[in-house]
Amino acid sequence: MTSIERVADQLAITELLYRYAELIDAGDFDGVGQLLARCTVGGPGSPTITGAAAIAQLYATTTRRYPGPAGGVGTPRTRHLVLNPIIDVADRMASARSTFCVVQGTDTVPLQPVVVGRYYDTFERDEAGWFFVTRRMDVEFLGDTSGHLLIDPRRFGSR
Image 1: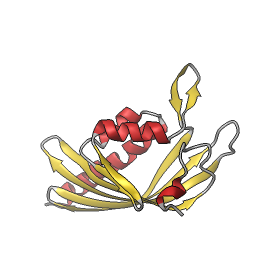
Image 2: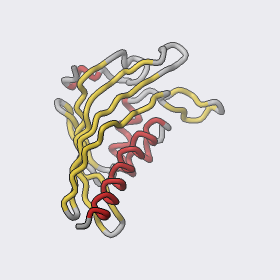
Image 3: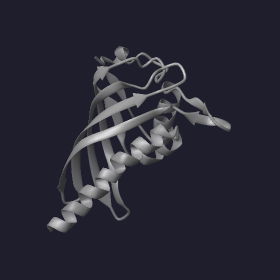
Image 4: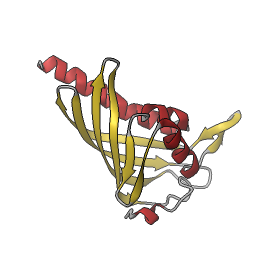
């Protein structure tokens, strides 16, 4: 693999990391499910799930959405910041670890970080390109998630 190919692969994987953040912040949980359709998702202390429909349902039942300007489904009023991705590519497989910081601001919750942690991802590449294979979300710091989540993340061993 040439340096140019390695950088192209790293950029393609970085785009997947960022696309996840864009979809969840838009409240497009079906899109999140499609992005992670071939992925096993979980974290320490939480069960793992697979499949687009199950993943979309998980986000829809655990993440609060606020009505948009025209009504509709709305968004979580968050920004998922994916930071410091470190990506290792080996032929048609790759791994990545990155930091995430979720900030939220609503009419009743001032702009603030609500969750900080790490993503540990693996990827594979086929004829269509790179895709998620596993995603482990490890929450390291919790702020006030009452405006963001419909569950108590501490149930799953989050700090």
